[in-house]
Length: 172
Image 1 (cartoon, rainbow, N blue to C red):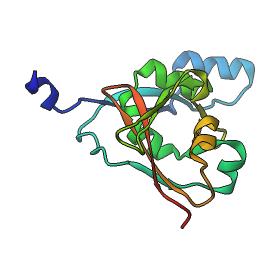
Image 2 (cartoon, helix red, strand yellow):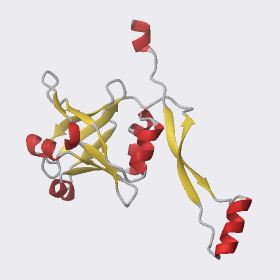
Image 3 (cartoon, one colour):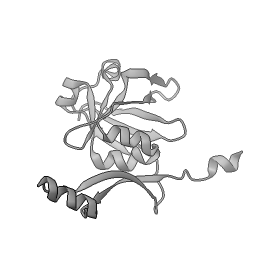
């Protein structure tokens, strides 16, 4: 049993595959329709050559005024792909990438002895038009009384398939 838990957690990295070269059929169709060929992108999985990042509150950020106003944490594109989507199935990642709202479980482990779970439709991720992502968690904002400048940490726990949250410090 111990051996199973001590083995590294293998991941498949999510990335975009861009297709700049049309097939013969696509090329002919664009000529017939008199429309320019547009490069396409598709979310794919690739073998991860490097080990997954160490779990140490990988996403650290200070809460902004805009995040307080809308009750959502903004997660940059790079951090979302590197620290969260690498642990998801390709179907889940594609659902999020295609504009879907993906509900997740989140644990507030600020008080390690008394973790609080947020679940159901109250916590969800969504892709923004800027290609960044938002984590909607109004109940957490209210319960933790998060303010502008507060520092928080997040990471995805692959074993529980949950987002982990920790309040780090008050306003800087």
